[in-house]
Image: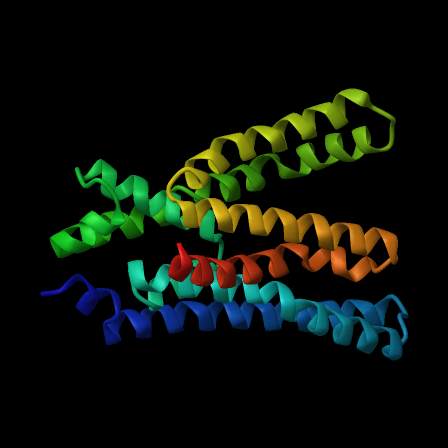
Length: 238
């Protein structure tokens, strides 16, 4: 049996659809509760409708990043599982890293090597790793989020050079871990990275110079789209 016979099976589609249906119903429940609470607080219907409309509009472009993630993961892990992971709690960098670590733990060099082996017995391990690893954040939130949020909010009310430095160092540390690995893989990886950086810088400057506040929220989405288009172009050229 081919691994994609399992990863794209009807059973997995059905299970994923049921899981997403439950999540959708939870969203509807909270939406209705929020509308009821807004009425209790005396918020005008016009203001509630305007908030709903703006939320819908501003949800479109960020969702493009999720679609891009699905397109990226589908050739590696099929359609239903990445669809479920990215729709619930997950992101493209995390899912790729977790899946890659899972196959390496099983003795394969990377996901491509695993695909070539056509070994279906590792699928459960990959899914389990991708799911269990991200639960740490949710478990942390259950027990510590309220206390952590209060401390962070308190720090934010005061001018703290250390806070700014710590956040900058954290961001820089994350970049230095992931960026060189991808940048040095090939010429295409390098050119895509450079293109994405240029897009980010240019759009950031446009947002500041012309005071286009909404653009700042969508810079990452535009960088992803243009970066992927550049990847297709440079793959053919280089």
